[in-house]
Image (cartoon, rainbow, N blue to C red; front, side):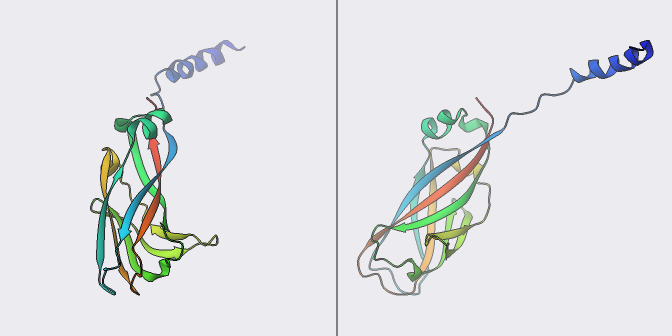
Length: 167
């Protein structure tokens, strides 16, 4: 090897050790469900808000994924599915539906995908600060097109995509 080439390489090799380490972020999904009871006394065509508490099991949701609440960097809801407890309940009866976590709208407007699942369009909002606690407030807002004959429970399945640092 040429001596001058060797001396030119030394500053580059020495400089590599001074580079900052790269954060080892990783992504994992959590699916959470929340039940909203729909009474047969809900007025037709009127805006209705139902509140329920969602929960986070920090051991199951974070520790099993090798992280902790304080290491969470982002949490976004990428999928919201609505499933009635009574299969005869027609979800097309809901109009103007939207879902909130705390004060933030995380999804609005119902649509049916090619598999026949009723979904709510997600807003892509980062809800990290709202789900760092073990519980969070969730609100389903909607109006009815037709009366509900029998009370039904509407389960909302939410897929959270989390980015975190390892523990």
